[in-house]
Amino acid sequence: MSQQEIRSPLPGTFYRRPSPDAAPFVEVGGSVKPGDVVGIVEVMKQFNQVEADVGGVVTDILVTDGEPVDPGQVLMRLEG
Image (cartoon, rainbow, N blue to C red; front, side, top):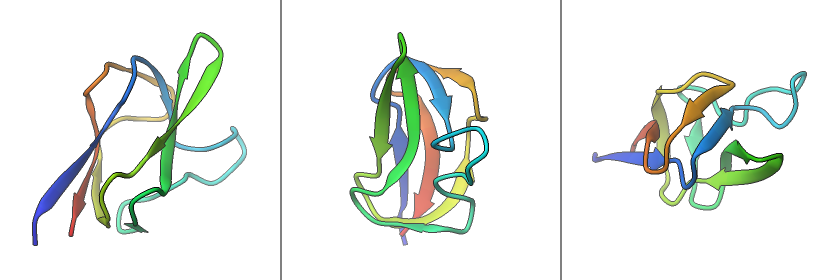
């Protein structure tokens, strides 16, 4: 099995859930497939969905909810 990474497409603030009281899009141990939304990056009040471009099982989530991120920063690692 190979390890894959999901990276931030934009600079901004990363959110793991669609709203403060909602469950996270994905958790460690969860499966994702290409096109699944795994988070949101907010840039100047614009909310941009982060979609998985690969499939697999989430092994690591490297950023916390509300953390600033840079373009290309690794957000999650997948095994698959």
